[in-house]
Length: 278
Image (cartoon, rainbow, N blue to C red; front, side, top):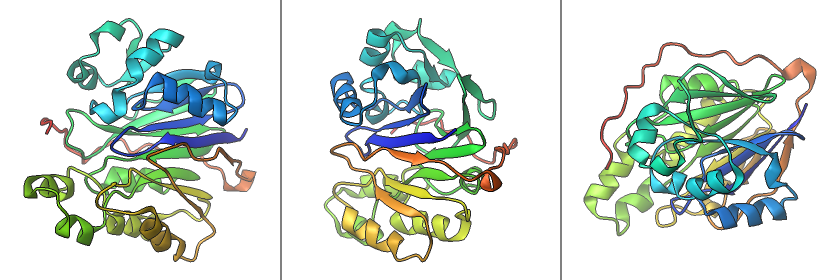
């Protein structure tokens, strides 16, 4: 069974990632409006009826601003960690809200969604791996640094959405105030191009076919710079830049049988829970 994946939007103006098979799909985050989600799904030839659930990584507005309307209009279950639901202030959709727990997979039809904690300045942030028939798709954005958990799961992915948020020189010399620069690069903000590239070079599995560079900063990065850095690495992985303005193409991940493996969870997390929202 192949998995089809696309970024519907990626950036500080909204994040939403589609992963599904021919019968069911999930959205990871719902940070664009319901109308934009519908339009982008339609352009990709994807029916909204295929979406069976939404998973929310953390409570920041660029990950949840479209969730209430989507959930209400389509009567979708939406999965949060308990602290995130409380912090998000989405009381009007509590009837549709369900909880996930790190390292305990949730089954949505034939899709298995595994959450794990990450470093970010939110109350209880998580990343996700979506699996089916031993094919694993990672959604790894809004990450302060590449912790052991991220490395562990990245090594198992056949495709991934990986944050490459900022160029270190552009951030340092840019117009952001000092407190915001520090927040971005303090280990609980975002991954730089250098950090993302090092993760890719050192821990990319040989069977990874697609890498979506995601959550690029509008002010402190450029798609051309990111693409040039990653395509210079001599691998067979296809590099896609996830746009902050429109959806990517829909890509099919279909791995030969001898390159599939079950997802191995990392039970003990070294990532401390974040308690402060900036």
